[in-house]
Length: 496
Image 1 (cartoon, one colour):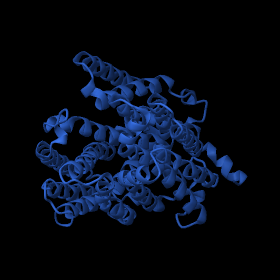
Image 2 (tube, helix red, strand yellow; image 1 turned 180 degrees about the horizontal axis):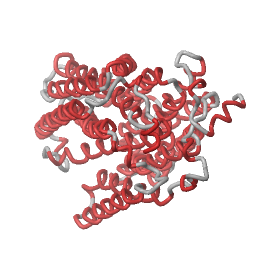
Image 3 (tube, rainbow, N blue to C red; image 1 turned 60 degrees about the vertical axis):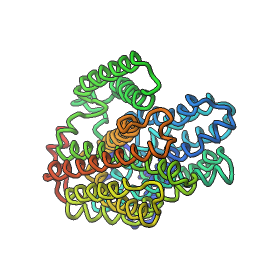
Image 4 (tube, rainbow, N blue to C red; image 1 turned 120 degrees about the horizontal axis):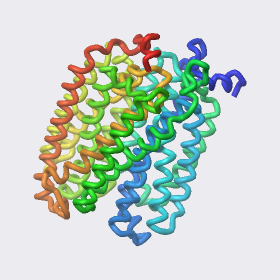
């Protein structure tokens, strides 16, 4: 990389050195961030389809299988704010590529694991690495591209990310059946190597406000207390959401008190100068409304895909590959329409697509709620899942653009980390709570009659969550202008 680019790492890229999306280096940068974060997101879903084979091969108990799945998510959610803050401070490209390298190492160890305990531990390592690279992807886009090119870049990133999440069950089923479960980890190695190779051409950027000066010496040190308490708060909350059904009442109460106390301490610590997460970000009505909408939409998204795949397998008799293939309209639509929707939102403002998108998703979820024994894929499943996909394509990219546009560029990593943490919390909360709410406890999900009743209730609740998300966008984003032209004023920069 040219020396000038290396020196640019001490601050965000100057306006005249920001990348054009159509340039060679711009395309390499976008490919680097989309492929790397796509691999990390894929591993969040691809493993679930292989759990039965892993359990048989390694002799794992049900509890061990749960930790093989949840260990990744626990460490990722716990450290994602720290990963975003480290990127802003130490260099977004540096932390992103460090995360990719760590993810490759964790994947290699997972592929050769010889016991359930080893595999669960290596999955935790994967999650730590993913926490470094996930927020860094969006922060690199925000810090590397011209303002007018960011919506299209974010749209492409969102489309590929949607593909990675939705194609996980299908790809996992194919690899497990034709190559063995270890290949769902081994396939990451050449992909990570490609990302690291391309990443050498990516410009560096960071938060220039962290440079020591006589006037602001408190910003010269990383917020270690805030980082540690944040890990405890996110980790405790994530643990409770993933494992509460296997805990005693006393353990749930204790864990809840620990999580609440940690959150209170975290808020107090982050009110100080030089905090890891500037709470003044939430003074932006757009930022707060977009994150609240994220909580509802991603909770509904996780619920719809979770219950639909289960209903297709248990009630309609689909095998794993067929159930995964049934959701393919989601990644296909996201891939082709996400970049277009983000460009449109940048011109018109995010309010309309972030209101209409969830309402379309809500209608799709309502149609899917009618899927039952004897339903036809083309008449009953395909229309609903396609409508659901169209709504997601309309809202996901504008949502991401709105969150980043509402925060100063120098806080892009933290803003991305917050939004990622909120999205995962929404998915965890919905998937953990909805089965009990709709009456699916223990082995009842194996009974097609009981599952269908619970499935219908869950999809209707998800539809309501999506409609509420649309209402929040309509009332909460009326101050949001055209995102491609919304500058961060000097007053806002000083306040944050």
